[in-house]
Length: 73
Image (tube, rainbow, N blue to C red; front, side):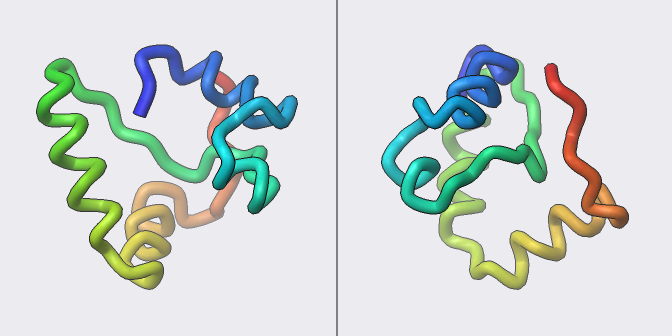
């Protein structure tokens, strides 16, 4: 979760992201959602973290069937 998606993407690309991003070499954005209320964003994040991998893959595939890298924000 971030207030500045462009900065978050850049930090992951240059390897300055969190421990999980560094460990898994995450450099591409597959999916994101925007919220106007931080509480809604936190609730959605908690929901998605409970999902299994299969559900997360289906979510990305539904929003981007070609699995193209999202444009820089």
